[in-house]
Image (cartoon, rainbow over all chains, first blue to last red; front, side, top):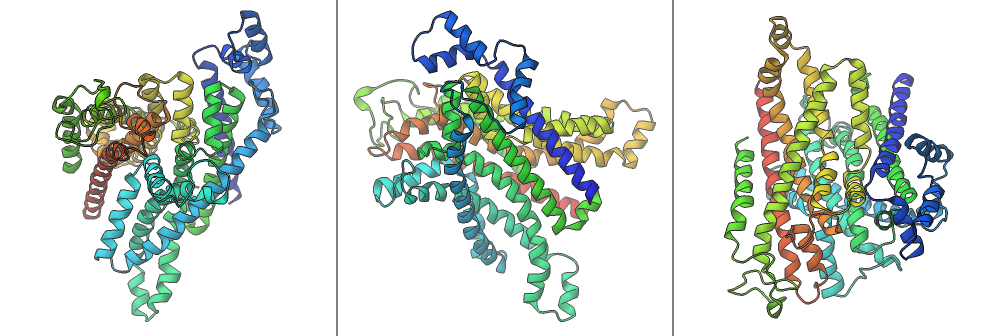
Length: 312
Length: 264
């Protein structure tokens, strides 16, 4: 077990360093003069060449690739994301503010997803092939195919423009989170329902279940002790995928609903070519991704000990 | 497999014939007729500067479906080669290649493509690049898994010992096993590419105006949500129908494969 843990941790570290390198390479090779972009964003005017050179030296862009990478990664290892190359302020506090808008949205979307999908999947699998089951599958299939930005626009059209029940733009009150959370949550619910349904159906076909039944174990006990744990395995895996889906959905949903979260932070940083900010967002999302996947991998092995034996 | 092939034919037909069926030039501006409701002359109405929405939708198929096809097939080729390299190279190669794959997987696709497309500057070229770079990893994982299991099969070892060239082995022993599973992955990635293109278009990083692309059309329509909400419905509906069709045919293919495996 310790060997597996060390192996997984090593993998996570390699991936994180790789992610940092990829991010840096990308920004380094981006076309256009980053120093010019920074200077224009900072002074809001046409800037003379010598000012651009000063900006270039300040941002550490005049050294070669590796010195610049080293200068960037060393403080990063201490948790210092550097300063915005446009405003000169520390990136971390601003990033934290953005995260404080994004995390509640992600969590409430997950909540909506779980609350909708678990009952739906349970009802659907009670009698597979019934019209209820077919309806749930159809609904989930359509839900998966709807792009988050279109669903968001439709919800705004219905609940904010036509009915006027809910606020759509910004994040001033708690009610502002309902529409974006619903937009993301419906997508999550759709894919979770699909996975959960096929997970339950598959778990019911395990060869040892008829044996239990013939020995007189109650149907409810079989469902709880043998079907549920089997169905939980794909559910946990899918949580990793859901996280990816959420992070992607959040990009468009925050823009549609004008929420000042991580995605708006990223889009405006890209526009201003504020490299430290872009790097920080990309690294934080990649970091969350890697850590969550690591946890899922561990949890997965706890749920299904056979996995560890297979690829240890 | 047949459902997927039919679907590809329909989509290719739509992307090539669609523009010919369009009643108007999709970029032709007609200010007096702006934001008009659906009528006999304009079946789906007109947009903010009087362009025919039906024509734009049909021309948009070329961008949305055509680009998605290009991107997902490129990802398929790159990913399969990378996966086979990992499976058939030594242990060290395998480890290194798979860590690179993991690294690319660590970025959520849309976040990565927004960053790439945003930094490269908004254009169709950077859209293609951004979505291709973020789309090969799943194929690589599947191809590696199948490659690893095939490598030790008796018939593959025998073929190698019999002196068959690596190319012949790849063609006759690997390809038939790889193709069905990779096609299932491909249908999923094709659908994702359509969503990705429209999402980037919607964020302003994708296909540039006046070219009609479904995501960009949604971006335009959004401003006029109050006056002409219908304008916002059509491009979204087009995306949903295409993605749904692809997903369903992918599911059918996957189920058929699972049945085949049960029998074999």
